[in-house]
Amino acid sequence: MSRKIPRRLTGALLALAGLIAAVAFAPPASAHGALMIPGSRTFLCYEDGLTSTGQIVPQNPACQAAVAQSGTTPLYNWFAVGNRSGATSGGTVGFIPDGKLCSGNSNYYDFSGFDQANANWPVTHLTSGAPITIDYNRWAAHPGTFSLYVTKDGWDQTKPLTWADMEAAPFSTITDPPNTGTVATLQSYYYWNTTLPANKTGRHIIYSVWARSDSPETFYGCSDVVFDGGTGQVTGIGATAPPPPATACQAIYAVTNTWPGGFQAQVTVKNPTTGPMTKWTVGWVLANGESVVSAWNGTLTQSGSLATMKSADWNAQLAAGASTTFGFVANQTTAPTQPESLSCTSP
Image 1: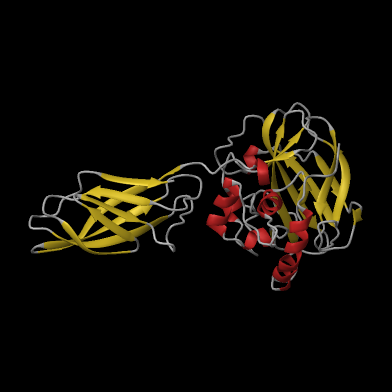
Image 2 (image 1 turned 135 degrees about the vertical axis):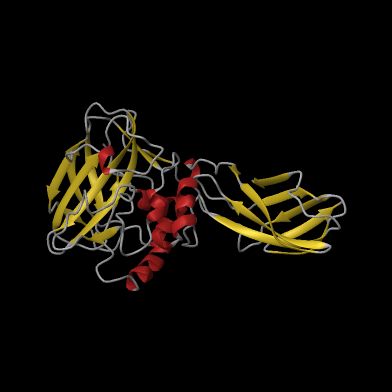
């Protein structure tokens, strides 16, 4: 099986200066490594977002959703999904909470966006029971033990990963494997040969745990794979990234104040989906005699009895489950009521 995966090396080299700068300001001992083969979520989202200018702008909608929740810092620190587990390293069940396995419940950066259940994560195509050479990036070198787990058959892909979702024993364990290259580069990695779990089909997660032997520190990562006869091909990044899904949104209308001849209202706009929402538009039908006097937190237009509010630049992006509000003041001779029609759209 090939040990190479597609990498936009030009973008990687241009981004290297930014990565080194990020490491320079990182907490001590927080830049270490992550699976490159099969690629972890953080690594492949970094790969997905590389541009010719060195910026990292993900195209994959799952990576976009992770950024919407956790910001861009994890993209430049994809090798730092770590946690100090107390007296000894290697904390697993009972230390990393269910639903936070992919982020390692990190106490360095916010990687929580990478815990999201999303069918669009970049994926590595593998063959069950086949030999594979594992590459684990060595951004900083440490002695320790690497353990690889895999999800059980029938695990619920629509929910964040839990310990109960994984096979109890790792399918691969190695202590102090060989390494290559100079640290703090993509060409520096630990590597070892192993055999993939037998009798696996379809989508799974390979979960990595790197327990240092010289520090109470452990590093974690989720690699999304599909056992379909593949030989290490990666899809879901760059040109193979799925298009962002069309997103719905919700609008909730509430009258917050009234006075003779007028009232004030607030509309809450919510993203109910599992992906990011990049902009939104709310429309409603004005009651007879109603006219909007002023509005805030968006751009309002009124045409006859139809009012439309479009998101402002600063509140256009909503992470999964997030919400924002806008308000307006209107004149009306009768008591205000809920609008006859209230719609929210997000392209």
